[in-house]
Length: 456
Ligand SMILES: Cc1cc2nc3c(=O)[nH]c(=O)nc-3n(C[C@H](O)[C@H](O)[C@H](O)COP(=O)(O)OP(=O)(O)OC[C@H]3O[C@@H](n4cnc5c(N)ncnc54)[C@H](O)[C@@H]3O)c2cc1C
Picture 1 (cartoon, rainbow, N blue to C red):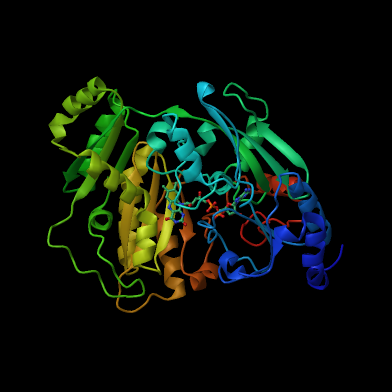
Picture 2: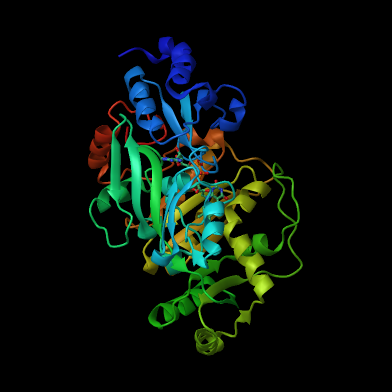
């Protein structure tokens, strides 16, 4: 095998020969830089058929490749030391097949989540994939993230019914299928979803859609303590009510959802406290007929919630989905955790985050999806002195040490200089040996996203 350095000069001509000059570019590389590392070239295949050929040659030549969708989540993991090729899926943006009668859709991986959602909404159907503007189908699947709708519709693994992909060594693969009942190859599909582009390039995917609800209602109850809010959550879990979103929001996060005044993101000064004291908020969203919503209203009357108007609902849920972006916009040096924990541990996780954040001079801003056990927690440095790189590592380690073995806390974002100080993914999973074997089988020369993950 050739050494990466001597071959790199050949990348562009070889790519041009393979894909055509219109599919390769070396200008505007800044747009594709990841943690400040620029790629040598950007390849934009115009057809799915070009991807196996591209990966085969990259594999032979030891060119490192990063799949790139909208680029909204490229900061995840350790800094990649070298990027030979960014494989941008932007030209693979077609809806391949949409069968509204069957509630299924097949789309190429570079299609934008928002445009596919719009196409489905025209038929009063819902693609339950949530993602910020610009995010693509492939990126959303690779990151397997979910937002407030997870309570009602599950995570991408639950409603994606098939993926087509190409492994690191250029072999085409398929998991699942086009129909909802298909179960063959289900595990391969699950493997690709959430693998952050380390095992292969997702080329296209099929989804199960949901009918769009006639209407929704959102009820917000405020509490003085997390314990009181968790009591109502526990009641909800025992009740027949089935919210499509159920978010427990701590007082600092509720400040972010309501006080959107601009702020210098590099400032270390504490934010000016709002005039009104913020409290813990439990926000529940239900979807369905007038009758169903009336029943929810009646059952929840004991908690005296506020019933949001339609316009308030839209603004509120947009703010909840955009919480992470808002936190980082306002504090460029924030650290974002995605936590997954058993439901019985919700209160402990929230309190552990508050404790660890306070001990290391951060403030924890938390949104907890309390019927599914996932939490987005921002550690915001509010000290007048900027925190040192090791302070992020110490705060994370302290936080993780207070969680049970069944919980995980992944750092999705933190300042660049803090990244080498600690394991962003959390403790080494017990099945690491199996993960390494899978990685070797799918990407034998480790060309995909090299350096980002602990499985290498
Ligand atoms: C409610 C909600 C709010 C969110 N808010 C934020 C936020 O504020 N900030 C933020 O950074 N993220 C946020 N995310 C997460 C992020 O935007 C998603 O993960 C996004 O869908 C990624 O899509 P992308 O096209 O931008 O992927 P990219 O950022 O381009 O890539 C993400 C990962 O997927 C891999 N990848 C991309 N395309 C493919 C492919 N075709 N095949 C294989 N691997 C691929 C990449 O290599 C990379 O590892 C949010 C997600 C949700 C659900």
